[in-house]
Image (cartoon, rainbow, N blue to C red; front, side, top):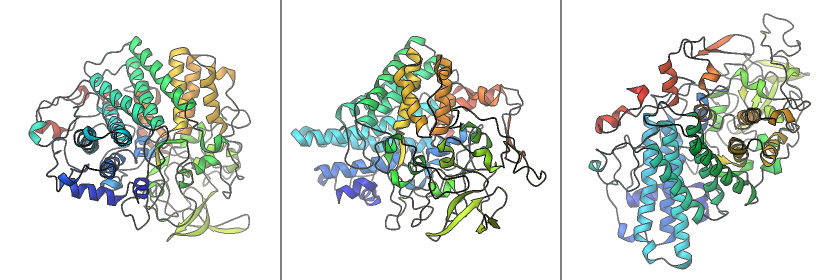
Length: 620
């Protein structure tokens, strides 16, 4: 029973803990409304390991609510479009924290007030677990019971550290609260805490988690030592990036080359430990698997499986948030299929889709380098569009590409399994702007893919299940917030900052490339720090696309101007495969627009309640 509870972070555990302790949920409306309103029968709680575990599950539930829809954040980058507000409404377990925000490449910094509140809801839930176990259970615990309780505290501290890491990544200086808040008066005068102080507190949480967590947690969804090491490494990587590249929009923040190098060094050491000390491997040891011919999808590469429930429990997934979306566990499902697929697949909605430019990032398995850029052509006005060499609507253009391309995207005449009422409707070909039509391909009749959301000529295959049995909101995929491939790439980046291209860093990047059946990097790709950084960025784009990393990368690298052009410029048009201009970003954008893209607005409703909360520079 406890195993099932832990595996699925079951809603029953969440409700039970809430009923027993009447904790504030993370759907609270503002930072200042944090207090538990009572403790029903609390004298009978906090007695056993089971009590502590139930409490921890509530912390996991609250933290999951602010991390398991992170793919929306890819919309802040240049390769993934996130339409509208995207996130689902309702329960804290169904994406509500993300709702109402903006996930376009610009103009998003003022729209995350709700998310800010949910993050503090998760912090308070973790504080409740940490404080109660520390004060009510640890003093009388010895031996194995003491170790078990310390491990539970370590999990809660890891979750709290992850949440504060997200807060400083977006808002810089934020109020640091490490205790249970019982009344509004306790926080109505709290000031923002300097980012370095918060960073050091996060490191303390991660240090404790590294020391107390097991090398491997036997329960899916529960954290272990590699997760703590990886997040500590990531925090130092970000700190090194900020200290190297600067953060002028954060008042008082200064660049410091020596501090950056120290952070990169510590970061690389943690990542190296994750890679070498725990026996972790890429999914199916990085074997690319088999790939079907163009226009067929009976056989898909292993990278595709990595983003389906078939990969649940795989050692590549260092830290995940679990889901169990069957009708018996309502509000526990992930909605990846709903967000990434079209109407053909259980009436899904394509909230998240690729830009045209993403396809050009997939290199050739024959050369290991880029193909000539594709030419978008309109097949309704150009009769040779589908046969012209290198045309974006010619299926042959996509031959011999990185296996991750077929695993990630669908282009014209690629197939997927249609699903309706939990049953397969057979294969359906994607043909841009030919929706739900009767088509004949190779003498076989099909109904083409139907969607109202493919704006640029592609849709995602990544994250879309190709088997029947679960609805669009009933997914049971354990969504990764830290996986080994990311660690390989972050190690390469951190060590490159310190020492330039190292053999083990190059080898790690090549392992990632090998899963796409690409040859190793040519020596020219790691001939210098800058060349190797470009190779790392390339792998981050195609390996981690639609997982929520790109926007954060662009900000910490100070690369928004590199992608969209300088202030006052012509911006960038996003085209479709037919050559039409669809959306334009950063046209004549002022300096202020860019500044507001680098740091988020402190929510005005929080400042109304607490005038000591200062505002970030671009939002004054």
